[in-house]
Length: 400
Ligand SMILES: Nc1nc2c(ncn2[C@@H]2O[C@H](COP(=O)(O)OP(=O)(O)OP(=O)(O)O)[C@@H](O)[C@H]2O)c(=O)[nH]1
Ligand SMILES: [Mg+2]
Image: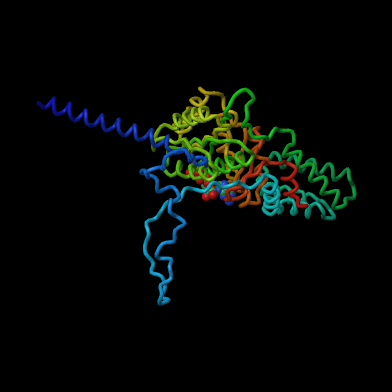
């Protein structure tokens, strides 16, 4: 008898679990925002279905009784209406040209203290050892890093000596050249999203928590959509439930479909599914957002390695972007090293450059990883992501 009861209990539990799985996978599939399809005039009038309240109510233009002024002139009575959740309106991202002009100006505002400080020091009548030390300190304070600072100061000293008398314009020219030399102009800084032989391009975004991965993924989706590309987002941060919502919201704003899995599910399988669905949908690019995990927890780093390996069952990753928060300075370099050991970083995104004058971290982090900075974050706004342009960056440092 006991065995029978036990068997029944097990059967109920198993059925329940299966039901949960089915719901889980249905939820995942039901997410794409409905494309703005033309109404099918041949179709019979649709009956309302569950979930229809998300659509614009059919009788919207009709005025309701609350809006009609009462004959005695008294204020309309406020009647509480049930909240109708509105389908998110698809936004048109800022066009690239305008965005870049605006962001370059913002970069100058946040970064020009370094260049101004250096130019003031270099303009002193006597460039004695003490002044050169001050120049060194200025560079170190801006997070340029010890090695690059030494190199820059040595070269400047040499060139200033050769120059003899110096005009401000000459000094500016020297400083510009040497900074540009350190930042580097040869690297390929394009974000690789379009492999030649297949679709979709696959980009994975990694980094410590709070650096701006999800925000960057969302902003990047907008940039791609603005350039006419189609995008699928993969919410491989299953660590926090809110993380997938956050990403999906970014996606809905530009009409990108978000693939998500069950909470606390396997991030590697969400990432795998995202690429699979991206392929099936024929989109151009799949962007995978990952969890911001503590780099000291080796188990979690292993997981990131697994996400990469599993995704690569489809195709090699075209780009692995490491997101670093520019305001964390040297700490970012430590993180960079740890991540680089687990996944091959192909590009760096430096976020929050709007909130710090320490733009020198660009130089330090490229040195550390031997990988170029490809994108910079200049604000919390949806269109505040810019490609990293060495010339524009150095000009922002030393002011126009
Ligand atoms: N000022 C500024 N804030 C930014 C920038 N990029 C991201 N942020 C902010 O940084 C905060 C964290 O961003 P998220 O994108 O959630 O960071 P995350 O790396 O995904 O964090 P986890 O998911 O917890 O790992 C948010 O408040 C963003 O608005 C930037 O370029 N400038
Ligand atoms: Mg996130």
